[in-house]
Image (cartoon, rainbow, N blue to C red; front, side, top):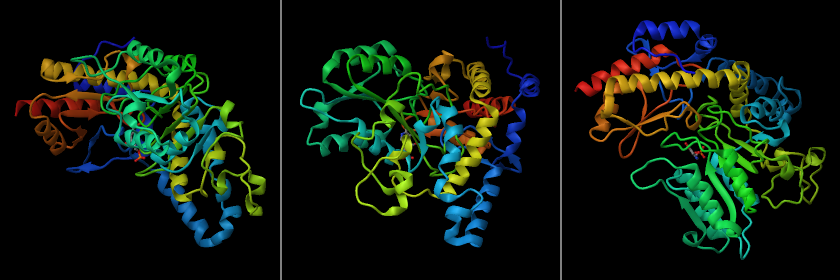
Amino acid sequence: MLPVFHNTLDFARQQDEDDPLQNFRHRFLFPQHNDREVVYLTGNSLGLQPKSVRTALEQELSDWAMLGVEGHFHATNPWWKYHEPVQAPLSRIVGAKPNEVVAMNGLTVNLHLLLATFYQPTEGRFKILCEAGAFPSDDYALETHVRMRGLKPEEVIVEVAPRDGEKTLHTEDILEAIRKEGNSLALVMFAGVQYYTGQVFDMKSITYAGHQVGAMVCFDLAHAAGNVPLMLHDWSVDAAVWCSYKYLNSGPGGIAGLYIHEKHATNKDLPRLAGWWGNDEKERFQMKKGYRAAEGAQAWQLSNVPVLLMAAHKAAVEIFDEAGMERLRVKSELLTGFLEFVIRDIAGSRIQIITPSNAAERGAQLSLFIEKNGRDVFNHLMAQGVMVDFREPNVIRAAPAPLYNSFEDVWRFGEALKGALAQ
Ligand SMILES: Cc1ncc(COP(=O)(O)O)c(C=O)c1O
């Protein structure tokens, strides 16, 4: 149960004092505004830099300088196996087994690899179900895969849209759409958390319903990984992808993630696009012909590990592991609840929060629909050292990340919003 909130600095500071995760904030670097830390509420876009990332990068640069190519085997973190130490902490973040996850490539690249394996249209079963208004990269990936198979997107892709006058989806509408498509459905490809509205979809029920009609069920977890509780393995999700530069704080363009359920990851005959890094490790340097899949999700790797990106990622997920997803979630619900309270206290009905108010249906982000002058409100906040982001045509997204944001940050956001609305 959430406490009774008060929109005062004293209340916010008391919450910070009682916060068991308060010290994690000091492990991050905050951009400055007028010699003061900004109120950083854009961790859903680019997470802050953990201080430990610089040390981790320096280690690899030093090993590279001292060892050259020998670093592959003799670096402090031998480069040829550098994906391995990240698997266990990553698996805890997404609720999987270590050999079901691997960090590699960018999100959209991984999405294409996922579709190459899990979208196998047949004459009768060829449709893909997704949410309307998905992130453009997801739309483009689906559209081009469909065309590559000689099919027409308008005959294949089925979008579930909000009801008239609404902005978020009803779970029952998604499940009904799955049942309606039935045997024609080859793949359900949904976001875990919708990037625009911040709505968390019921991944467990969607997966169950998809499997009931014989479809594969996959998720884009760009806004979910490190944000909301995930149990990919137990929910029997077939495959998923995510990026690491948002809540996972692994740096701009950071290395992305892929999850493949072990029932598929152990099936070496699945169709896929392969590269030498996904080949059986024992044979990797034998330069033999004929791809032989490695064990687990790492079989989907294409290229050798981008060590500098992986070093930043490893340092970042280690912090996550220390904090633990359960404790982060407890704080996240409080912090987002406080943000909602502060916005309602200040703006009343002038701002419509389109993110669901039910905690189970949202993570750290609130999307504020501002009918008029949204861009001006955004500009005013930024000028006050409050970093949020703006998504056309009129939504401001504010995301208090429980790893480094404080209750005082949320209170300061409210004060700046007051100023913005007064203008
Ligand atoms: C939901 C979602 N999918 C896909 C992407 C594209 O990610 P990338 O550029 O890392 O491939 C993003 C980027 O923000 C995203 O939010």
